[in-house]
Image (cartoon, rainbow, N blue to C red; front, side):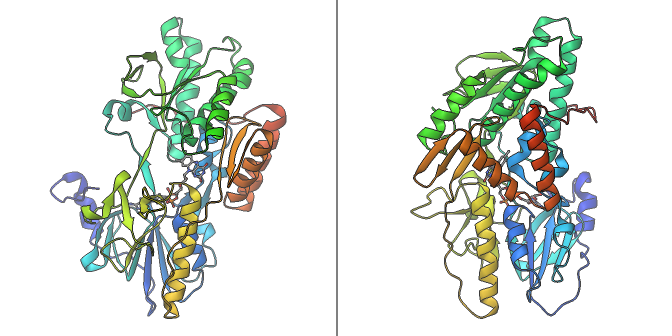
Length: 443
Ligand SMILES: Cc1cc2nc3c(=O)[nH]c(=O)nc-3n(C[C@H](O)[C@H](O)[C@H](O)COP(=O)(O)OP(=O)(O)OC[C@H]3O[C@@H](n4cnc5c(N)ncnc54)[C@H](O)[C@@H]3O)c2cc1C
C-alpha cells in the first residue's frame, strides 16, 4: 500500500494518517488487532471483558462468511445473510473498541500503525488481514475477469451474470449470444468447484423458468484447472467424486490447462484453446495481504508472514500474525497451515489464551493445529467429505456440509435466514434473489 505524500492521491491520506485516532484512556496494555475475519474476531471474542484494551480495526464494518460467497454470486442468498455487523457482535465488550479504517502502514520502531483516518499506538499488534485474489501477474485477466474474495465481488458476479443473460435475450448475433452465456471459472479448488456446481444448477433449474427464449443447454460452463486434478487439497476420493458430480451437471472440466489471456470476450489458454466468454470468474489463488512496513525477510511463499510456534512474526516480540496471512513453517507444515477457516479460528483462540496466560505471567504453549477435516459441495444434495480417515460423498456428506456451514455463520438471524432460504430452495429448486439492483460495469 503506497502512502507517499508526493502523490496527490495520497496527500490527503498522509495528512489524516498523522492525526491520532480517538480511543479511551486506560492504564491497561493496548492490543491492536487488524482484521475482523475468522482469526481476528475469534481472538477478540475470547478477550471479552479481560484486563487488556483491545482495538479492532477493519476496513469493513462487517464480518463476512466467505465460504458462502458463491451462493450470493449465483442469487441463492442475499449478502446480508452472510455478513454480520462487527459493532453488533461487539455489544457488551467493555474493553473492546472498533474503528472502521484501513491500515496503510506499520512503523514497528514507533509501535504505531498509520491508517486512512489517523494513527494508533500499540503495545501488541496482531495482523489478521487475510488474503487478496492472486491473479499471478495476469494483468488482462485481472482487468477483465472477476475475483471471488468478498461480498462486493460476489455481487459483481451476480450482476454481471444477470445482465449478460438479459443481453443474450436481446442480441440476434449468435456469436455474441454464445459469449454472453458462456461461463469460465478458473481454479479447481473448493471455491471453483462450488461456484461451478451452483452455476450448473442455475442453468438446470432457473434458465428454463426465467428465460423461455433460451434452450435448456444455453449456458456452457467451463472449469479450468492448471494441475492434473480438481480439488487437489482433498483426498483422491473427493477429487474423483467431485469430477463425476460436475460432469453429471454438464460442466466442462479442463485439467492440466491454464488461462493466459482474457480481453473480456475471448479466453486464451496455454495449450492454444480459445473460448468465447463474457463471464470469467477467477478462483485460482490468493496471496497474503498486509500493510507495508515489515521486512522482506518476514515474507514467505504466497506473500504470507513467517511466524514462530507462538505466532510471533519473526524478529518481533510484540507483532503477531494469525489466519490466512500467516505461515508457521515447520517440518509438519512446510507450506504453513491450509488457508481455510479452521486454522484461522484456532489461531485466534490460541493467541487469546496466550495473552491471558501472559497476564498471569505464564509462558505461552506452542500452537498446535487440530485438523477437523474438509468438506466441499457440488450443487444440491452432493458433497464430498474427508473427516480423518473417513472419506465419503453424496447426500450424507451434503447434509454434514449444510449443518457445519449453518452452525458456523455468525448471528442467530443469519442462521435462520440461510436455513430458511436453503429449505425453500431444497423443495422448490428456486433461487429467490435475481434482482439487478445496480448496473454492473467492469472498470
Ligand atoms: C470464495 C471462498 C470460499 C471459501 N470457502 C471455504 C470453505 O468452504 N471452508 C473453509 O474453511 N474456508 C473457506 N475459505 C477460506 C476462508 O474464508 C479463509 O481461510 C478465512 O476467511 C481466513 O480468515 P482470516 O481471518 O485469516 O481472514 P479473513 O476472513 O479474510 O479476514 C481478513 C479481514 O481483514 C480485513 N483487512 C484486511 N486488510 C486490512 C487493512 N489493511 N486494514 C483494515 N482491515 C483489513 C478484511 O476486511 C477482513 O475483514 C473460502 C474463501 C473464499 C474466498
